[in-house]
Length: 168
Image 1 (cartoon, rainbow, N blue to C red):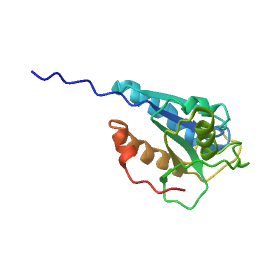
Image 2: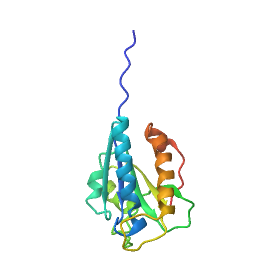
Image 3: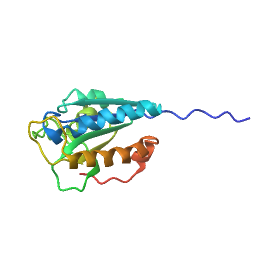
Image 4: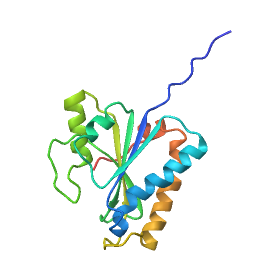
């Protein structure tokens, strides 16, 4: 009788960032809240969740022991509802609405820990950025589409690593 070895569980970090007090800028945080509840309800293993107002250099440590990292942020870009891009290492510190970019965090992780987990960025289309703690109706619809897409993918996260995703 051949003994089957248990499949190793992938270590996956989902990290949403943005300001929930600025309407659609809170899409990343809302995504994390909803997905964490779903993953726990489904009993899926190997997942960690985090959210913050912005990425910080300390996040290089947080991703260093992961197989897959998915950053989630609101987007002002000209996209339909949501899109996924592969994050590449970038030593360029970008000063945007968030202090460090996912590429910068990945680059730091490589330099400090000699680790480079597969890293994706989920962009969810947002529309309004006023001081208000609720999403717009259209942003809420985009969030729902992104969540439904990821529910299917997170059951088997290796599919996200093998999937051909364009680099941004």
